[in-house]
Image (cartoon, rainbow, N blue to C red; front, side, top):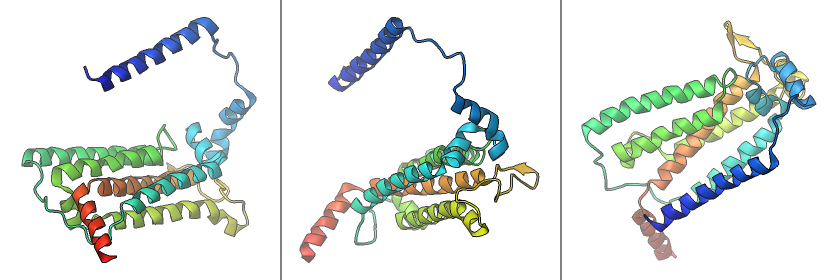
Length: 250
């Protein structure tokens, strides 16, 4: 057994032992009543947001500005990672042969299933637990599957590049902000929900702005993580040649 595995097992055992000890010593009791803030969300969430999913309503509607700030922090981290991986020349890799046809066929099926589930998680986030962030994270996994099976160069040849993914992320983030500020042009406060956006479209419940928030968050997160995955898949030798070229130009 390696030292790393042993350390992880000891940490896990320590966490379990600490949790058990605290539970036996303090004997915490489950609350028998709901706090006033909790009662407010339980009573008024469906009325104010037309959404049965209280968590999504709280995240996007009741404290939407806080969520936007958290989203900006995530995108700044992605921008920082992409800035460190920026290249001055076109990426052209030598490896163009992926795995076998059996692996490729299985990957096609898996990618289709993941994309379908990811879209369902995002677009039904106002109805069931989920939303744009977990849906986008799930969709980004498809890029991580395609790269080792079909090779990174095959994606680049199809026009799927980090530059375009970053552009999609920027457009989605802009649309996310527009959803929040559009009500202002009608004389309403920013981040307004049902006063500006419809609760139903063609008989389907969209819970006002919640559906649009989840949609654009889904696109932004998926494209951002996929762009990072593409950069991380570039071999280290390419960056070494890039550094040597920059130093030689100086």
